[in-house]
Image 1 (cartoon, helix red, strand yellow):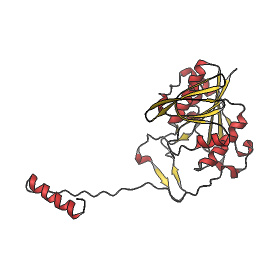
Image 2 (cartoon, helix red, strand yellow; image 1 turned 135 degrees about the vertical axis):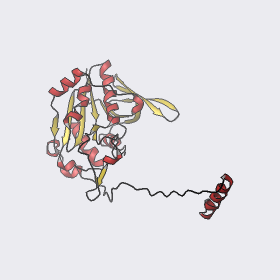
Image 3 (tube, one colour; image 1 turned 60 degrees about the vertical axis):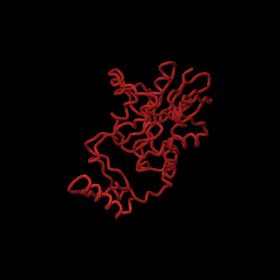
Image 4 (cartoon, helix red, strand yellow; image 1 turned 90 degrees about the horizontal axis):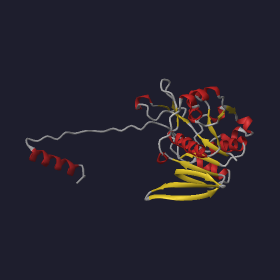
Length: 266
């Protein structure tokens, strides 16, 4: 019997882009995506896809990737398909734009997961590189009334059980839970595989399933934020540098000590 795995993946601004390309629309309260740098699939979510594929390598499994957003770059979001995932569901609606409330996002994702059919396992990246909250997987587990195991470095499924090797501060621990469940993974899992040419060609022939809020059977209020973003800005740092010179090293040290004492640092 095939195992049905759902992987949650997010399209994000490339975290490796230069700081000079990063800008914020302070009035709108959002990060402005650079036009000359394409987005990417969140790195930890690629680890989640890899975790699902490793399960599929050893047994019969179907992998469905689900993503929520407004302006998807299909060549980017098809990367999980080219890696070996079977299906791609994009939740696309203007109502989802600039949603930063983790609970509101989780409500939409939970509805999509239920609509996608039966599932045995949900795998997520531990957090996204844009907001870095790490809350959505936990909220999805809560809304679906599922157990959640975090920071897995190895995930195995068999006989109605999920076994997760977790990364902890002083080593690893083994956790076992029943299916279905939510598991989050991180880069401790290892490097995600590169898409093969065959996989890339197969992905070009696959079309994603696109659902909006109406098709999900939710009212747009379900995706509205309960958080009020008061301000979003790039912090500035003003640094003053004062060079203290003396006639020799001894004089320089004496003048430095006097300056530190004057500033009440010693």
